[in-house]
Length: 407
Image (cartoon, rainbow, N blue to C red; front, side, top):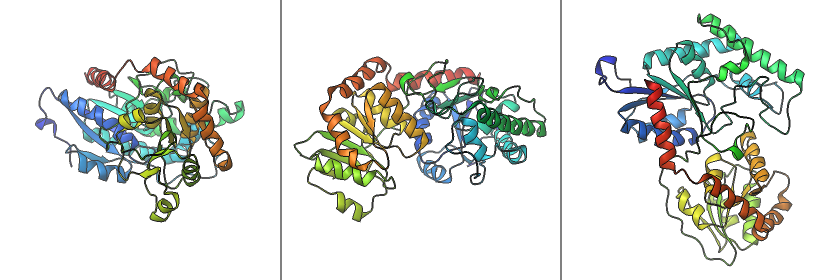
């Protein structure tokens, strides 16, 4: 769907371009949908630029707004240091290894943005879109849960706080990325950056998390609170069992999923499971009297209110929903971002981690979470600290600030 021409735009209408570049799935889009609706209620037009083709196809079924195919670096560069310990090491894999790689990506983002003619560009895990918007002198903002919004800090803040890169490794990665950025900016006639941290400069940072869960605990800028995503989901129908109620939200491809389901069955828990991608054979192997599968997503507020424990992969929204309901967690991380979240929850005292290779310990972890009251107390403390602002208040505040930024 094409954008409105300037001549077709009502005089008071502001145009907001939401730009998403890195990552996959529907999480990023679903988190912005409530904000998009709030902006539309404020007489704004929202245009979506998505690099994930699957998310774009799904969104086109949900909205009449323009959904544009966004530029993205093809594939992922290999042969770079592992594990990734800083944001610069991560984005080197997606075009930031050289100016030759980054320049066409920057040009494509500039062309998309110029064609869209936005009053404000809101970037979500989209460093090249942010560079493009700034190089065009357009108003801009970043939004994200923390992981994809590193703070403006020199030297670069470590992505994994308990494994900081050494000074030489940190300087090498920062140097490569800064040289790539400045080479690409020169190619489009834009001013170079003086320091790597300037790549994170934005008109506003909408950090949608809380202090104890931020992937960058050294951040000095405000945190706005979580945006949980689209409303909806079916009401939970709990199975009957003598053990505690457990909500399990896992992915079929995770190595921990089947061992965790077996451990929950052995504990005789009343377990409600949403596990996309589970085969009929896997479901049959895990089936038990006290374990019920839901093919559809569950109402997150209702299911976290009604359970005693949440078992999940460490997605930021699910973790926040559990803690805002005062419920402890058992987290089975599959990605670096989730592993950092799991570590943060452990540091809060509100949960434990179920790591790959530790399957024999899962039953013991569940026993601790059920029997040791400190985990529930820590989760309830989190709720007491952070539940003052409702989802409606957080969304309204971000939408109002976007309107201010749009001019």
